[in-house]
Image 1 (cartoon, rainbow, N blue to C red):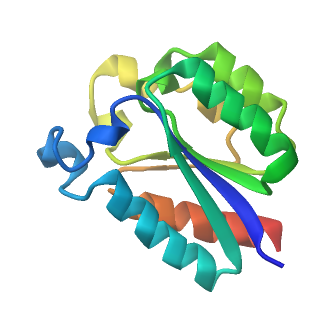
Image 2: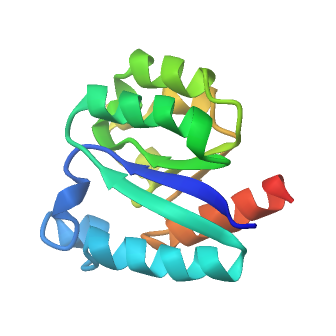
Length: 145
C-alpha cells in the first residue's frame, strides 16, 4: 500500500521559475511536484503537493497530515526563519519530517541561517536545487521502511 507524503511549500514558492531564477532555477512548482510524483511512485509513495503564502493554511495542512500522511516534506520559505507556530504544528506530527531549501540558506544573508523548522526536522536538505525534493522523498522512503 502506498504511503502518502505531504509536500508543503511556503510563501513565494508559487513563483518558482519566474522569481530569481539565478537562485531558484527555472522549474515551476508544478514541474517540481510532477517529478516528485514520479519519484514517489517508484518508491511506493504517493504525494500531495500544497503551497500557500499564508502561515495558518500551512499549519492547517500539517494538522491534517496527522491523520492522512506518513511523512512531510516541507519547504517553509521565509517562515523557516520566523515561525514558531509552524514548529509547534510539526512537533504535533508523529511521522518523519524533512526540511528542504532550494538554495543553500547558509551561503545567504545571516538571518536565513537560523531555522525553527530544523528543531523538528529529521533531515535538512539545502542547496541541491529542486532535486532536494526528490532526495527528501528518498530519505522518507528509508525512514518509513
